[in-house]
Amino acid sequence: MAPEDLALVQALARALRAQGLRMATAESCTGGLIAAACTALAGSSDWFERGFVTYSNAAKGELLGVPAALLQVHGAVSEPVARAMAEGALARAPVQRAVAVTGIAGPGGAVPGKPVGTVWMALARPDGPTQATHLHLEGDRAAVRQATVRAALQMLLQSLG
Image (tube, rainbow, N blue to C red; front, top):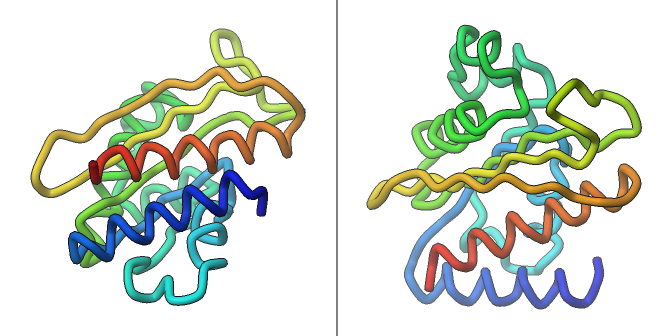
Protein backbone atom coordinates (compact mmCIF):
# COMPACT_ATOMS: atom_id res chain seq x y z
CA MET A 1 0.00 0.00 0.00
CA ALA A 2 1.26 3.47 -0.87
CA PRO A 3 2.35 5.54 2.16
CA GLU A 4 -0.37 8.14 1.55
CA ASP A 5 -3.03 5.41 1.46
CA LEU A 6 -1.71 3.86 4.66
CA ALA A 7 -1.87 7.29 6.31
CA LEU A 8 -5.49 7.66 5.16
CA VAL A 9 -6.45 4.24 6.56
CA GLN A 10 -4.71 5.05 9.86
CA ALA A 11 -6.58 8.37 10.11
CA LEU A 12 -9.85 6.64 9.24
CA ALA A 13 -9.23 4.00 11.91
CA ARG A 14 -8.52 6.67 14.54
CA ALA A 15 -11.66 8.63 13.64
CA LEU A 16 -13.95 5.59 13.60
CA ARG A 17 -12.54 4.29 16.91
CA ALA A 18 -12.82 7.72 18.54
CA GLN A 19 -16.49 7.92 17.60
CA GLY A 20 -17.23 4.26 18.31
CA LEU A 21 -18.38 3.68 14.72
CA ARG A 22 -18.05 0.83 12.24
CA MET A 23 -18.02 0.78 8.44
CA ALA A 24 -18.73 -1.41 5.44
CA THR A 25 -17.86 -1.26 1.74
CA ALA A 26 -19.90 -2.03 -1.38
CA GLU A 27 -17.50 -2.39 -4.29
CA SER A 28 -17.81 -3.04 -7.98
CA CYS A 29 -14.90 -1.67 -10.04
CA THR A 30 -12.43 -1.99 -7.16
CA GLY A 31 -13.24 -5.64 -6.53
CA GLY A 32 -12.61 -5.47 -2.78
CA LEU A 33 -9.54 -3.21 -2.79
CA ILE A 34 -11.11 -0.72 -0.35
CA ALA A 35 -11.86 -3.53 2.10
CA ALA A 36 -8.34 -4.89 1.56
CA ALA A 37 -6.81 -1.48 2.30
CA CYS A 38 -8.83 -1.21 5.51
CA THR A 39 -8.08 -4.71 6.72
CA ALA A 40 -4.36 -4.40 5.95
CA LEU A 41 -4.17 -2.41 9.18
CA ALA A 42 -3.78 -4.53 12.31
CA GLY A 43 -6.76 -4.10 14.63
CA SER A 44 -9.18 -3.21 11.86
CA SER A 45 -11.76 -5.60 13.31
CA ASP A 46 -12.48 -2.81 15.82
CA TRP A 47 -14.02 -0.62 13.10
CA PHE A 48 -14.32 -2.56 9.82
CA GLU A 49 -17.41 -4.78 9.68
CA ARG A 50 -17.63 -6.23 6.16
CA GLY A 51 -17.23 -5.71 2.45
CA PHE A 52 -19.64 -6.54 -0.34
CA VAL A 53 -17.99 -7.21 -3.70
CA THR A 54 -20.81 -6.86 -6.20
CA TYR A 55 -19.14 -6.91 -9.57
CA SER A 56 -22.15 -8.12 -11.54
CA ASN A 57 -25.57 -6.52 -11.77
CA ALA A 58 -27.07 -9.70 -10.32
CA ALA A 59 -24.81 -9.41 -7.26
CA LYS A 60 -25.79 -5.77 -6.81
CA GLY A 61 -29.42 -6.88 -6.67
CA GLU A 62 -28.98 -10.03 -4.60
CA LEU A 63 -26.52 -8.74 -2.00
CA LEU A 64 -27.39 -5.03 -1.79
CA GLY A 65 -31.00 -4.87 -2.97
CA VAL A 66 -30.28 -2.60 -5.94
CA PRO A 67 -33.49 -2.69 -8.02
CA ALA A 68 -33.13 -4.25 -11.48
CA ALA A 69 -35.14 -1.37 -12.94
CA LEU A 70 -32.58 1.13 -11.60
CA LEU A 71 -29.78 -0.80 -13.30
CA GLN A 72 -31.73 -1.01 -16.57
CA VAL A 73 -32.65 2.67 -16.67
CA HIS A 74 -29.39 4.23 -15.44
CA GLY A 75 -26.77 1.52 -15.89
CA ALA A 76 -24.47 0.13 -13.21
CA VAL A 77 -22.12 3.12 -13.44
CA SER A 78 -24.49 5.85 -12.32
CA GLU A 79 -25.33 8.04 -9.36
CA PRO A 80 -28.61 6.25 -8.53
CA VAL A 81 -26.91 2.85 -8.49
CA ALA A 82 -23.99 4.08 -6.36
CA ARG A 83 -26.49 5.55 -3.88
CA ALA A 84 -28.53 2.33 -3.83
CA MET A 85 -25.37 0.28 -3.27
CA ALA A 86 -24.29 2.40 -0.30
CA GLU A 87 -27.78 2.42 1.20
CA GLY A 88 -28.07 -1.34 0.66
CA ALA A 89 -24.79 -1.97 2.48
CA LEU A 90 -25.88 0.30 5.34
CA ALA A 91 -29.18 -1.59 5.63
CA ARG A 92 -27.49 -5.01 5.57
CA ALA A 93 -24.66 -4.44 8.03
CA PRO A 94 -24.51 -3.19 11.62
CA VAL A 95 -22.54 -0.09 10.66
CA GLN A 96 -22.81 3.69 10.74
CA ARG A 97 -20.91 4.34 7.47
CA ALA A 98 -21.08 2.55 4.14
CA VAL A 99 -19.15 3.56 1.06
CA ALA A 100 -19.94 2.29 -2.44
CA VAL A 101 -18.05 2.54 -5.72
CA THR A 102 -19.06 1.63 -9.26
CA GLY A 103 -17.11 2.56 -12.35
CA ILE A 104 -15.32 1.72 -15.56
CA ALA A 105 -11.69 0.90 -14.82
CA GLY A 106 -10.87 -0.22 -18.36
CA PRO A 107 -9.32 -0.93 -20.65
CA GLY A 108 -12.73 -1.89 -22.09
CA GLY A 109 -16.25 -1.23 -20.91
CA ALA A 110 -16.64 2.36 -22.04
CA VAL A 111 -20.02 3.38 -23.43
CA PRO A 112 -21.21 6.70 -24.88
CA GLY A 113 -21.13 9.29 -22.11
CA LYS A 114 -19.22 6.97 -19.78
CA PRO A 115 -15.56 6.74 -20.79
CA VAL A 116 -12.93 4.64 -19.04
CA GLY A 117 -12.16 6.35 -15.74
CA THR A 118 -15.81 7.21 -14.98
CA VAL A 119 -16.57 6.37 -11.35
CA TRP A 120 -19.55 7.06 -9.13
CA MET A 121 -19.02 6.88 -5.39
CA ALA A 122 -21.57 7.20 -2.58
CA LEU A 123 -21.53 7.31 1.20
CA ALA A 124 -24.54 6.35 3.32
CA ARG A 125 -25.02 7.02 7.00
CA PRO A 126 -28.02 6.59 9.31
CA ASP A 127 -27.91 10.18 10.54
CA GLY A 128 -27.84 12.09 7.26
CA PRO A 129 -28.49 12.05 3.54
CA THR A 130 -26.54 9.79 1.20
CA GLN A 131 -23.79 11.73 -0.57
CA ALA A 132 -22.61 10.91 -4.08
CA THR A 133 -19.57 12.00 -6.06
CA HIS A 134 -18.73 11.64 -9.75
CA LEU A 135 -15.07 11.12 -10.64
CA HIS A 136 -13.25 11.28 -13.98
CA LEU A 137 -9.98 9.44 -13.41
CA GLU A 138 -6.96 9.13 -15.69
CA GLY A 139 -4.60 6.25 -16.26
CA ASP A 140 -4.69 2.53 -16.80
CA ARG A 141 -6.90 0.03 -14.99
CA ALA A 142 -4.63 -0.18 -11.94
CA ALA A 143 -4.38 3.62 -11.67
CA VAL A 144 -8.16 4.09 -11.90
CA ARG A 145 -8.79 1.44 -9.27
CA GLN A 146 -6.14 2.85 -6.90
CA ALA A 147 -7.42 6.41 -7.31
CA THR A 148 -10.93 5.13 -6.55
CA VAL A 149 -9.73 3.46 -3.35
CA ARG A 150 -8.03 6.68 -2.26
CA ALA A 151 -11.11 8.79 -3.04
CA ALA A 152 -13.37 6.40 -1.12
CA LEU A 153 -11.10 6.48 1.93
CA GLN A 154 -11.06 10.29 1.78
CA MET A 155 -14.85 10.41 1.50
CA LEU A 156 -15.20 8.16 4.55
CA LEU A 157 -12.74 10.23 6.56
CA GLN A 158 -14.46 13.52 5.62
CA SER A 159 -17.80 12.09 6.78
CA LEU A 160 -16.33 11.68 10.27
CA GLY A 161 -14.92 15.16 10.71
